[in-house]
Length: 110
Image 1 (cartoon, rainbow, N blue to C red):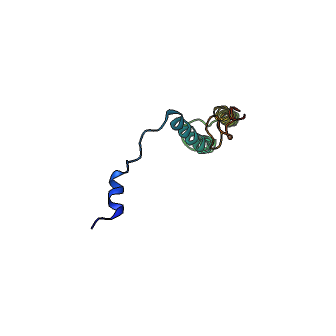
Image 2 (image 1 turned 180 degrees about the vertical axis):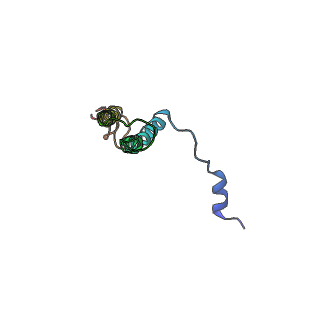
Image 3 (image 1 turned 90 degrees about the horizontal axis):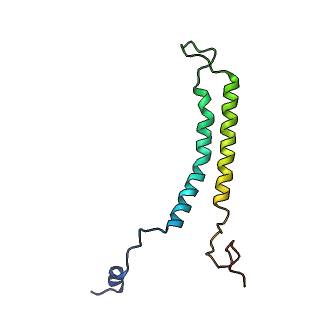
């Protein structure tokens, strides 16, 4: 029995595994941006692991002023990371390619 679907599957090529460099970098940057809130939450939780004044361990208690400076530093670094991601993604358009109407470069306008 010769079905029309049997020969078509052998003729179709497997999708290419290779990704363009720009597409690959864009996806990794989006992955990093998605992980930034998780990283921030973990960094904000670090002071919870520091020894407190009421702990009976031998480690010295962490001064509150150091903890506040740490929290402020993490907050500032997260803001700078978001600004950096913003600059890296500034030229991206939603779905358009260079020269098409959705392009942010303006080359697609006649």
